[in-house]
Length: 124
Image 1 (cartoon, rainbow, N blue to C red):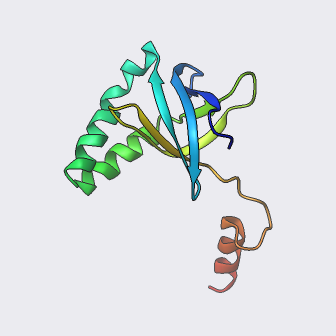
Image 2: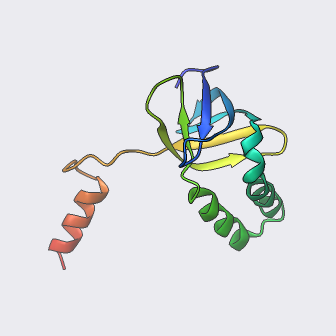
């Protein structure tokens, strides 16, 4: 992903929660800055609680909040393009943003989840 590219962070209802300026990619982790839109207020509490739990190393709480954030089905959209699925989204109170792209499973590819399940079921 190119640096300084601007995306909208959207929810499952196509509502824009804010803008993300991507700064760099590091081992599959996209890093950038987040500028909230008014609609972000409806989910900001989840991200604040996630940050507090991470700071306290309360891993059980982090896992639950991560699942709640994943349940929002957030995606990135640039211009009129199709939304890009992302996971492991973190938005920090200082405006920091990170996420990972969701890798589409390739049917029949060696090492793909579907291939591993198929192999596992045959060896049982």
